[in-house]
Image (cartoon, rainbow, N blue to C red):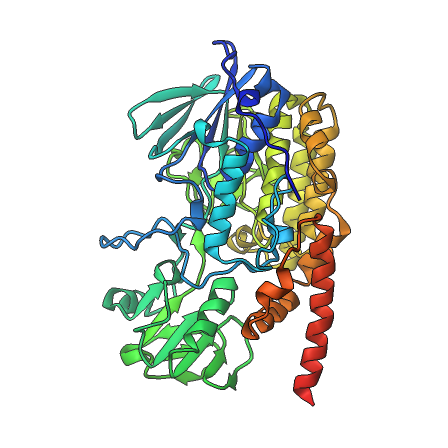
Length: 497
């Protein structure tokens, strides 16, 4: 399917005057690129009312999808991408609503393909001229009516709106399990942030963590290690080939000995890979803007903004700070949500942020506070009364919750938008106005489809399955995945005969 080419001159904001509103975007990964694209589509930008600058610390765009070497200093790498990584959701669901993956792309593309997609997206919409590469944001301070942003170039610039898009897959999260520190200091354990391939780890490898990385790494380690032990909280102990599934580790002992939550023990572990997630980090904010602590139980809502390392609280719509220090519509945190299809979701978030910036009266503090406290009470009943447990769950969405959230953001943007979304909606498809049913269905079947796709790849038929798919539009991908699902069911039946 051909996309219209956008002429660069349409995006020029040379008409900006000193009275124009300045918008800062921190980060040129998938979130920052979406924010920039949506901003450039706005009538306010095209008329010169808004201007923008994106600050990117690295020398290329792509964020977590841009590979990075492991620093010899022990610092975490700038990207946790490992050699065999592929997406864990089908790309028709993963893609921005404004830009599909190229026809004939593998259904679950690898990291190189995703990085190329992001670069193609930036080139198609002429985003690069607005990005200052090799420029780290060092400090963001509220100064009465505007944000003062200090960069590594020793410049201090003033902005009316700051969109925080720096991602949350950089700072490793380590468990506080007894004995863990000794394993790390001796080199017997490492975080998955530094994992690149399954070689030279020893005969017996322990992988801790049940998320996508933990599942991928444990499966890949099974191809090289004699024994792989995969530790997942509350898992039922079972042995399948050279894979041992075990519950949570409660103690890391001497000489490669570990104890699990059910009291069982494994010995002779050569190396442990900690696929235990990452911390949310915003080093450019001081404590008077963003406190580093777990907030106290609510009600009442805190009057200050908190980073628990599991998320930011309290944020209206997971975006806007509810604080009296500065207007809620002048700062936004995008891309914090977990267990979602991120690209289309952050597009919707960007539209909501710019809508609120243009129409701050549409953010109703009382109603937003009620919504936050309602979610808090729901999580209290679901997880526990412990504030830390609630903080861990705060930005985690259930399967369909992300689509309800996106639809709510679309509805919010329509309220009094005027021209802000007119240009956007006229150039987009159904996914940019309401989440279509096919997208929900495909996302819900992502695990089944990934198993089916792996079988296709094993049989060497991947290119045959996707050849030409997508040239006529996304419905071709929808039909293809339905055929794939039926084919896999037949294959599974055959294998059991």
